[in-house]
Image (cartoon, rainbow, N blue to C red):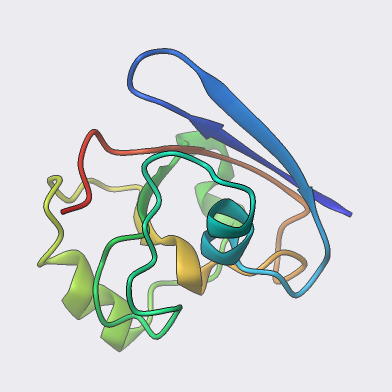
Length: 107
């Protein structure tokens, strides 16, 4: 099992144990994590699963792909160094533990 911690703008957190091969977007939507919408279902086409990977975890996640890079320029919340799409971060693909901050708005 992998562990993902979602830090919310108001200070709350959600911690999920997820199966390898599961994206953090899918885990968040399935478990009702507030602030993660996932409108496109994980196709890197909407940007509504935007998260900020915490600095200490940036080296563990794979590099940003071309489609993801393009979508990150279109997110509602500003793009930062740790900006990623949750649909592109899959448990077991370089990380077993990950902490992300959820933006204040996705739409």
